[in-house]
Image 1 (cartoon, rainbow, N blue to C red):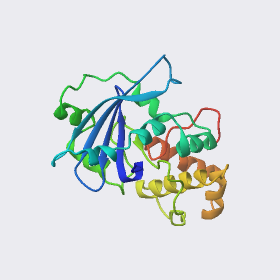
Image 2: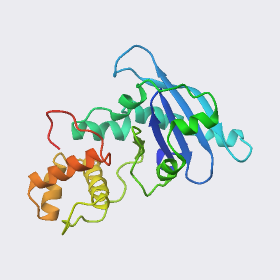
Image 3: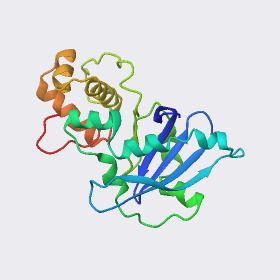
Image 4: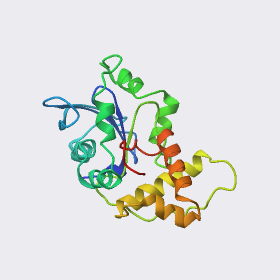
Length: 219
């Protein structure tokens, strides 16, 4: 089965997840529902809509990452371990459990449910970690931390989005590789006070390059 790194996945209100293949134009819309109430319920895929310019075969279905999506949105596997280490709650459930403004009933409405054409082009770009509006990108998957991002350098001028993206990648990599104090590591790497690094991390969260932190826990 392909992992989430082979697909680009975005959450939206109403339990919807849009999964876009990186190698072709296949797009899968999954609606997840759970039993019980509250943020602790486990969500599972109940509805699937696939849109593809080519005929859909059983071979295509075989590679749709149903299990990887369920594990990601329920905070299982590597993502769950990363959130625990970061002291954060599951950010995907908050988005998925919101009521949608309207119920999409067609592929066209589903596409609009995830944003404008320009926003979706950005969401489908594997080099871009920005997500449109109130959606949250599913990233990582069960493949582990991967290669270490390039070494960070302290910015000479104002803090840019490009720097915050690089900071977010480094932060996530440090957490995924078992560092319990990533802000301290980044401070040492950039020769910057830890308090300043924590402000950078806070800015990255505000820009949605990092998931929201859990109140009362250090970044």
